Length: 259
Image (tube, rainbow, N blue to C red; front, side, top):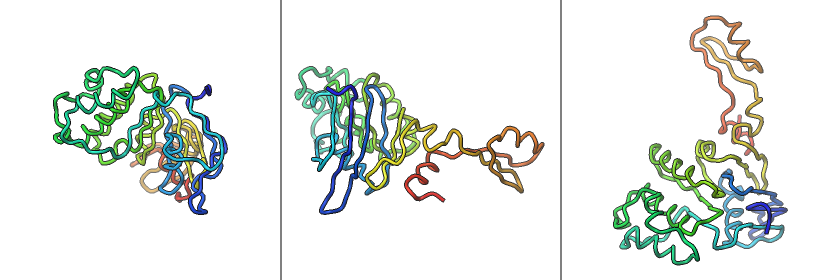
């Protein structure tokens, strides 16, 4: 068994001569929430599907520490079972595992009513049900694929709180919401053209922490390494703001779409 939850070296995958994943290296430690970011067509989905065991690789090494019955997956789309109750659905999936969590306990964790029919659930409630299905088997490793697509801001933040409560679970998150990656992930990787182009803490990715700050005021703008000294030298000016590059700014630069 690998000492990492996930160890990937030189991963390659092509479709009809078109390279989707091009020699990708990746390690995910036990207990961390790791976000994989990238535009459509960058190789992100292919990489995750290989990690989940849903797609074969052409070359490279892929080692997954947890056993298959210790892996949970929350897919972007799930099969419809509108006539079942929440309890029936979670109990059904619990039966696949040797030592599942009690379905009622899991349903309480995601704040759903056991007797509610799935057809009556809102979109946010359906996603919470998906999480219940994903964690009922006590996974050591949980894959979350675009978990809050279509959520309103309040529902998205409620979902984040739910994910943060999954202590001791290794999580691999794919998302198009950069604020979601920043809120949940201890580490992120940006993939472009089948390769990881940057990896690290979202607060420091791409040199964010040491990048020049932009100081703006009515009638002026400049960049500086020492915004405090500059602001002090300006005295009283109107419309003063100080900003550093956001995760979105850095992400767009990394994938070649920045200014």
